[in-house]
Length: 244
Image (cartoon, rainbow, N blue to C red):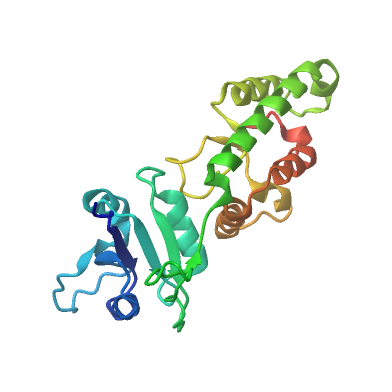
């Protein structure tokens, strides 16, 4: 029985894509390299049969070519940009993500002595979207919402917007909101609308954060998410539980 051959696309410039292709072929990786996606369109570049499209077409390219994996070229895309793309892309179909760091020659190798030709790279995953973490986050939302509703006769008086306090507790309990999430990063297709952003803890009326900084903090939150982060933000932003 023939095993499924992994289909890979490279996200990077033509030059870096050729380097990745060479590394994979040198290691005799059992995968089909479908082509590459360019971060920046170059009208002067000669036509290439390996060019699949541009970065803004990435989700469509994944569906059309039924890709199993994307390899991002670190020379052409910053880590922040790569994580931002991962957040923006739909969760289905599932795709594995890897990075080839700039000037690295060590993406290729054997991850196991029993798996010759297998290769490894810097695997990247967003904790926020891992199934187990997502279930834990939802459980935390339910438990905190129930606790806040039960304690509402005492706690609601400390909230700035009392009606909003009750409304948000019910929204989170029903799953139409989450207490903490991505309010500034482009992730509407993958996340539930959030009451708070992780950037709120560092934001003040006297010194508001730039929008780019807020997005960067949210990307770090998605990458390194732990339930304790949500609890910490809830405690620190308790008086604003009723905000829209």
